Image 1 (cartoon, one colour):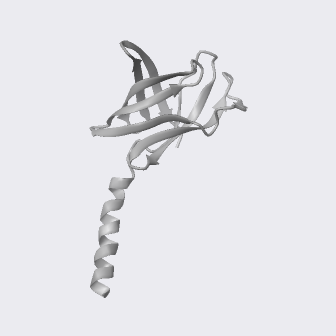
Image 2: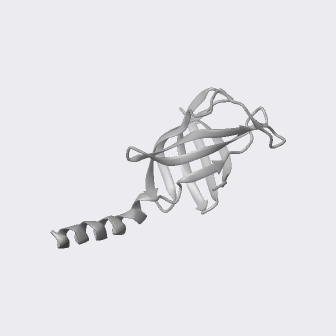
Amino acid sequence: MKNLTLAIGAALLWAMPAVADPIFGTWKTIPDDNGNYGHIEVKNCGGTICGTLAKSFDGAGKQIASEHTGKKIVWDMKPNGGGKYSGGKIWSPDRDKVYTSKLNLLDNNSLNVSGCIAFICRDGGTWSRVK
């Protein structure tokens, strides 16, 4: 029994780094059409990657109230390896549009965001890591 417990513990410790995807954390978006930006908390959501709006800010950096706080902005993203993610959607609250999206982790602190509706694509800019 003791060996089984040790084996399970070792397996859990070995598997933990795989659980913590480098994209997980809080990201600052680029300003939207209204000059506002947000902090998106990106995490594991049932085997895919999602992100919710944690905080909103005006162009001067002052935190503002938003009816969208707590709503999913990113969902169903899947890692492709090499810091690339796809297969998911991103909702742009300022335009109330949902884009089929791709994410590309440029380095540990920069995330390039893009998305398309049919053949019309939009560059979501480069988000920066907050924490």
